[in-house]
Image (cartoon, rainbow, N blue to C red; front, side, top):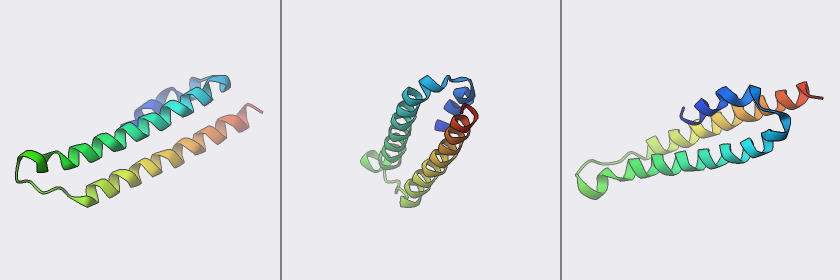
Length: 82
């Protein structure tokens, strides 16, 4: 859900700025996935809590769903500007 917050400004972007925004979205997705994986592994370094691989899997699935929504919005924006 974190990257979805950035899509609120997507519709007001000029078509020239979409490529720059696209690069930022990919960096945000990567940073979010790294953060979530770190947060899942962190408790194992200091406490006895066990991490769950499924949290990592579902976080990755969520990012994939987000990227599909993003690509759909991008395609719609490009079609509307033609």
